[in-house]
Length: 336
Picture 1 (cartoon, rainbow, N blue to C red):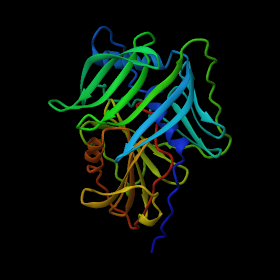
Picture 2 (cartoon, helix red, strand yellow):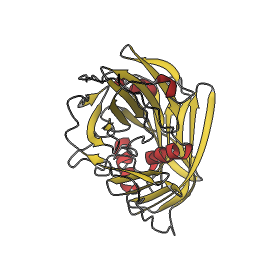
Picture 3 (cartoon, rainbow, N blue to C red):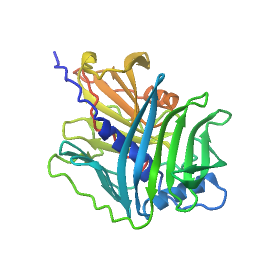
């Protein structure tokens, strides 16, 4: 009889740090566009985040049913490197390599060589809409929606620096489900952000072979493409997907889902007719379910129905044991 494992809880600051990636490491690195092209504007925002020095405060608001939560975290970025958080509870990054640390234990990941995300408009229709002010700065606003559907996300790009300074995910009725935005922003006289790698912990490995017992789909849902496979020090396999605007990480581990050990506040749900638990958090949507001898956790910043469609496409090969998990390591920052 396999032994169930208790779930490691997600710290509020750690999840807020992950959300910061929606602004700093935002979009696929492709040639910048110009003029009134919304996709070009978002590409330009990605380029700006790797070259412009930034210091500020990022605010994350998210809705869980009728309850609205708020978290703030300090952030600093310069020349493509950044530091977010404080003490041992930090995220640091340089180039395509990321580290996340909690209580001094580091997890590391990097983009798989040669893997390119889809373009920002591959799965979404983008439109340049009204102007707005964020952190006292004028911005251009790009709306994202499915063809014929309502606006599901809104991106605010600073007119002066070209930085992405706010991102909202909306419900089908237009309610803001999750917002990540700068409330304070300085883009000059900023000291470089030099990442410091925590001294403890084993690195997460980029790998092409995760074992036959794990489910590895090249595509999920409406446009999510597999960009990376990672093996965490505790044996958990992480699959990282992007649809060009949003990211999805699927964590897999053989064993039995111990439903009693999951964090409070989740909502009963289902994934492909399997029992599941759904959480709304500052890191996005988190869904936990078990199937064919694997415990599965999906973490995504996409609109909820896009997440549901993607995780429903996860098919498993089965294993001889049955399981559980929700690891606090919530996946790569943003879409890089």
